[in-house]
Image (cartoon, rainbow, N blue to C red):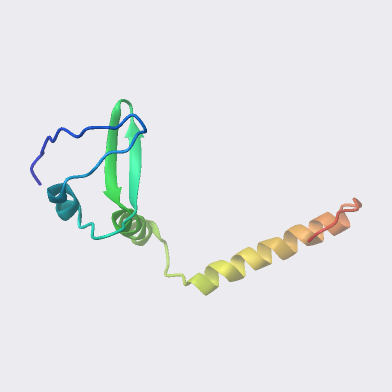
Length: 97
């Protein structure tokens, strides 16, 4: 994708308007959320869906074996149970809610 530079006015209250051509290029329609990243003195806007897609791609690239959400939740439950068991055997009175 070619680099494009567009001047945008920022109002005193911090609001700015993304031109229609920018929204179209980013795939934004109607009300939309974007991720704003500040790096040094530069700001980058990314459609939130792109961040999710990147995270999923990174997971697929680095995952050692296929896991489901249920696998993940089962692991967290087991860790919590183990933590609660350690707290109970530690001799300290702790309230768990």
